[in-house]
Image 1 (cartoon, rainbow, N blue to C red):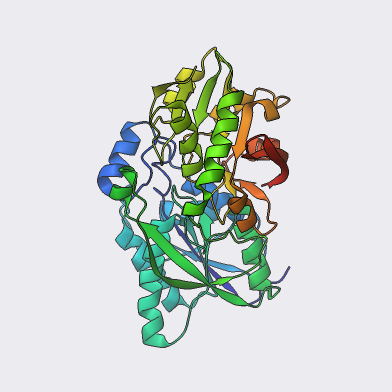
Image 2 (image 1 turned 90 degrees about the vertical axis):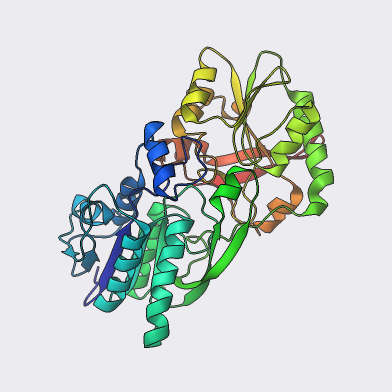
Length: 387
């Protein structure tokens, strides 16, 4: 496998995604990051970067250019690379400015592809830095995101870390020659925590493209889907069983279920229902695990429009450990995971499968295969789930 004269830039945002499992709905800002650590959050961006780099042969002529320590050097060395380390950071106190500085330096270093691990906030920082240099030079640096954040609306990310590594290899070898413009989207996190989704298009980054390996742009539910949502809710509520705990993921489709029950719903959070009553709202991973002790339970989720993720995007509170606790050995998967979707969401996938990216490969494989999807009142389809 030849990477003759190729240079790969690597940037890791070490705090990307840290707010996910603890229910903070984002990781932007020092105060949120501090709160996440207080709640017991564990950084996972390094592991996500390693998963991508493991797909790239280290015993090759490829040069890896990265930033010190947790911003890339550790991940590269963990995968057998001896990277060229540039720049400087304060360990444990990295900022968005460090990301922007690193991206600008990668352009100056002449890397052939910039691989970064983070979420939408990181993508925005990369865009701001690269766009500044592009305007000055007239060139455009190809970039590719390793999904590691809480909110990942942008279309510059691979479907999962392994896909990021595979696509990077294909591009650097010349097997993927075309570059597409991927949208860089981000939301107002403070408004998001109040249940308001205010998304903004910041610009476009050039990305190597392979339809199977790049995630789509998140699309919202349309107002015309309300009738389908109510029909789905009617079906799900009719099927609920006494004594079972229901862990209900975020979304307008799942909100229709709690409305049918006559209880509130955290639109962008995870809620817990028992015997038709809301027992906990906006819970995090550890709180869900406490409620699950000694109880039979089901998880209700809806795919993200345009992307198809049912786990691993925006509902990280429903972690691999939560899923394993609910499902057990996996034999009763269909009895414990309820997927609901309007027909419009399914059509928006254009034949692409539903996706899972929990961060646990074994759990992702367990969830893969085929699943029944509730699309209306007593209406279900069987649809493929992939990791």
